[in-house]
Length: 331
Image 1 (cartoon, helix red, strand yellow):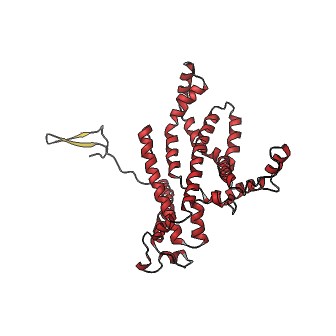
Image 2: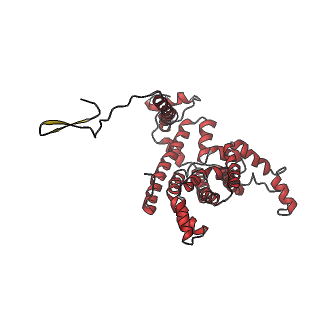
Image 3: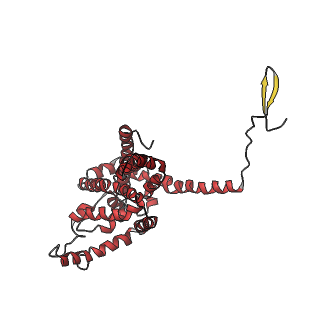
């Protein structure tokens, strides 16, 4: 009997149905194996850099020790070296705990209020441009800072804002905006504005990519129908563009909420100094100083685990609230 027909038994009689073909198992080709190999590299990456380091979380429950080798710190001593929640209690009772959390949350909430909607507005404005050549030029200029490291990008602002030789102070004095140079880099009151502005300049173009792609996927028929009905540009944005990209906005908003305790040490570290330490010390810099600076791996790991647990709680809570309010969420 041929393999491309289905066998059926009716009233004890065997019949064949040539209209229904059997599902034959396809033989893997060379391209299939190549794709599998490429996909497996991502699994290896996660295993090495995401899951294997989880074993190091055991340090958060150990007592302080003097070893400078982090591998020795993980396997150091016996079960007697475990201190339970001692490291967490030490951090929560630290005199700097309140200031560190205030700086971390305050700076991130301001960035969430200012830097989160900025790429959305920028993407909408980009979609309204008529000239493709001008649009590509603007995109290239705004995307470029993303590919520059914070050491270089921040170094440019350190030079521009320098007290003695900075162009900003020199220009402001000449035009009469200020009578004498201002110590922008050393003043605590200027640190948060510097972080917000530099973060916005560096990430505005790159952060708008997803929203530009989402807007480009909106059917043009919707805009044409709205134009026939007498809708202007503002009406199209309000009733077509924004609702169409709302799922994308919700997704990134929830992810932004979960990252309220992540400041990015490479950004903060460039502008942090002894004069503005009161407003610039955040969880990321605190962990770096104790972990790599003082080799207090147990304490730094405990603080990092504390931050991760709170981030997970914020992620779940943000997703729950968004689903209740808008009916949309990550899961």
